Length: 89
Image (cartoon, rainbow, N blue to C red):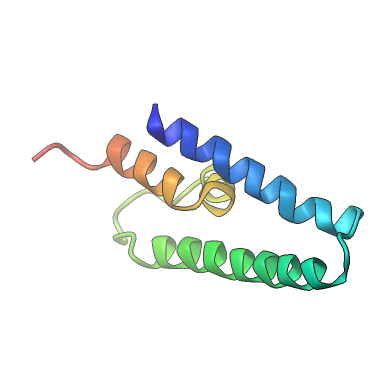
C-alpha cells in the first residue's frame, strides 16, 4: 500500500518537473526546477544501471517494462521488485 502511494507521489513529481518544460515557471523557479529534473533523470538512470549491473549472470534479464518502471518510480519500484523476487529468509 505504501509502495503504491510512493509510486503515485513519484508520478506527481515527474508531472510537476515535466510541466515546467511545457509551461515554464517564472525565472528563478524555472532554473531550480530544470536542475531538479536533470538531477532526477541522472539519479534514476544511475539506479537502473546499478540494478542491471548487480544482477547475477544466471538471473533472467529485466524486461523493458520493468526497466521503465524502475526508471520512473525509482526506489519504490526497486522495493516492490525486491519484495516480489527475493526469497524469504
